Image (cartoon, rainbow, N blue to C red):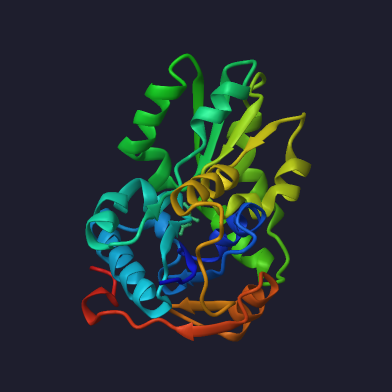
Length: 267
Ligand code: DGL
């Protein structure tokens, strides 16, 4: 049986991995699901998020007939990969901050981690740092506001320059920092703006290539995936999102059915 590779994120962040996936698996069909009704994930309570992520992914996997799920969201992956793998029978490929490649690149051993507040504080992230960058100083910067900036950019709205300035200031306060991990899939979409704001040349590291490599090794490079091209699902579909997704090859946007007990945030 064949079906698409389903990419999941809270919002448009997962679109930052589509190019790498298409380059590595040109014969594969991609599908997309986002939980934009609950965006951003990075500031929500963990317990609630786990059930919401599992509900969103299981519903979209069954609607799409996916052969693999790419959790193109660091915030979701560092929290819910185990639960997703327990609930789904297809392979689940996660996204974690690219600490290891960053540590291989950094000459100064001072590295910035730009991610959501959830991701910078997760135990998963701490373990990655201890395992792969124990000799580096990691400057953790919670930049939840930049998630909204990426959403705005893809919706064709003007950026808030002050948001960028404030979010990035802690990085540029470190005179020897030479590498920045884009630990949120929304952030590679802002790459041009991020580069323009840097006071010096920086190694920007994201997880797109590593995800595509992993999916190819899990599925095999022969392009086993198939199914109807260009389908997408969202918890809050709308015209602006539909236009953005169409620009990335997902031209049919449908509403995602979700169980009632995950529809509202806990008080
Ligand atoms: N794109 C998601 C990530 O990689 C986070 C966005 C959010 O906070 O919803 O972490």
